[in-house]
Image (cartoon, rainbow over all chains, first blue to last red; front, side):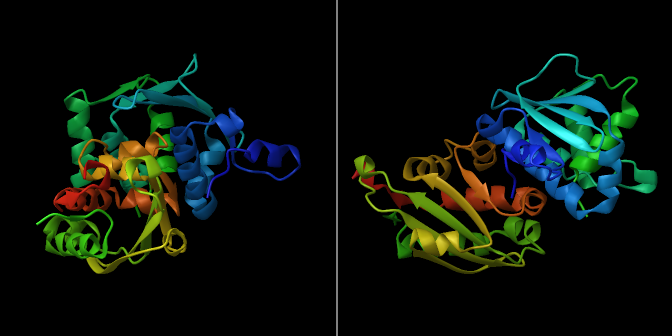
Length: 155
Length: 140
């Protein structure tokens, strides 16, 4: 499903879209997130296009498990690192349930995340209540929308 | 009446709880894959042999849930593996299954986007396990 040793494959000349900086020590959360994105971009061409265009360092911190990861997107490749690394463009902080909901946000008109349907409204509501915090939103809205599209599993 | 953990009686009671749940019925519409739960042995907790729970779930219904070997469970489309203690924590609401997977306390094998798409269904399924009164071998 997803392989924390994908970097070894890349070095052997097999291009894997997702690499784990911590190799076998990649956290379960890092492996899940990396695996989710890899499955999305390898099975859905529209997500692959967004993935190939993305250049950003994105942090995701799950507040109720106290774990974070840093996603380094660039040149059609993603490096997943354990923990929050410095110089992030965008950082998302939410509980596990909200992170799962975020990945269920539907993509609507013009590729914009749909915050008007039931799931979207729940996510927006959590943002208003402070249960979902996004740092770096100003100036990075396009990046955030791209990340949401790459991350979303909704059909 | 309480049933022995991961026994055929427990599987039947679990199946009944799932089929009684309108939340599960709605959230799992479209689900058509088998799910295996591998319960790893913990002899010091009086759970000496691994067991597998094989769940035939289809369109919001539990068609069949049975207890078999770990290998039976590993042959399912989706497999979640944890120790006896972890599953007990899930069934007694000490551990949220989603958090458990993100922390690596429960290991998931299967297509991740599909699982994430059905997060609400899996959460309700976890709720269903908590409604089954259980006799835990390490508490006997």
